Image 1: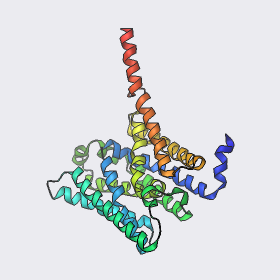
Image 2: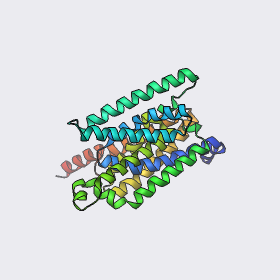
Image 3: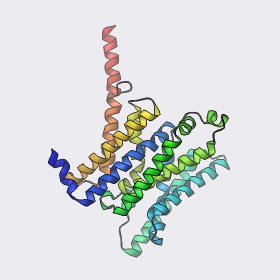
Image 4: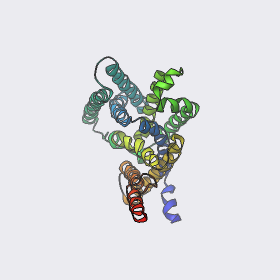
Length: 287
């Protein structure tokens, strides 16, 4: 058993990959808790798809892809807010319009770049965590520290804002600033996760661990803590499955996270499908 755990660690690429996987598991669960509680999963999907043209443009300009992805995410968020605030189009429809347009633009740019340079950029879509460099690790750590620091410093404000926007506004909290700040945190988290799971799968890592925890505990900080546990377990387990069974790393991580959710959905003490059925049968027999 010990040999199974230690063997992959003799390779530097696995060491870097596991560091990235653990960091991503942590920040996705923390930020994803806000998305899940506010029912903003579609927003996470919109931003994750919208960063794709930024990645392609950053590659063309030979600059850090994290910068390109983050700028594209901010622009997409701005576009969603402009459409929502200046027309009768609802937020979910605005998200659908923007993320599909940005995603289509990103696919087009990537296709053009691949034809001209004879290279494969599909790792932007599905992740390439085994190919991360030391520079990628440093960038991800910096993003994670910033995200977690902001959540720690403004936890009470974000908590109030998350559950009662009108109440937060009535007591003088800068709701618009908190809204923008949360969008930035989501964008940064997605950017940090791109190398691990790619644009297409990042939403799952944002939402699934938090939802798994939500079925087991009630308070937001408990959802975050337990979600971090599930996110880290999913990331590490997915990496080891990828190593030993020659599976794609990003999908392996997501599948483990989904499996944990299924167990929680079925066997949660208070909300589990099977446990609820067993309780009902027990009460019927008892009565």
